[in-house]
Image (tube, rainbow, N blue to C red; front, side):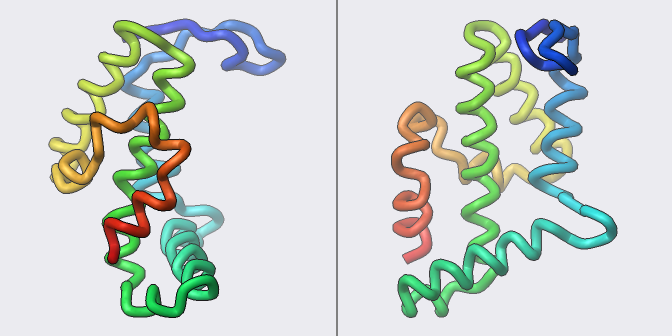
Length: 137
């Protein structure tokens, strides 16, 4: 599905993009496999988040980085969906959701789709960190 959006290109020109290609590239390069100059930015991110939470609450030291990642990755997909819904309403939002489910299934990552809270996405911005904290405790 091809869509046009305001401010998506250089100097805010409207550009056509392919939904599937855009989402696939974003998911692979920013959520699932964020490698920057040979460094696994995903691992660094989760280690940093975990250490920051431990500074605020020592009991969080019982939570492994891997367990944190299994709960944060679905949240990152939810935040992407929320941003997408704000940018593109209607059929483009629905198409993105359908594509995401198919993409995750093809990648063998149904665990991410199943870990997402599909009903609360509109309220996610206000509750994401609290949601994560209570999922892990």
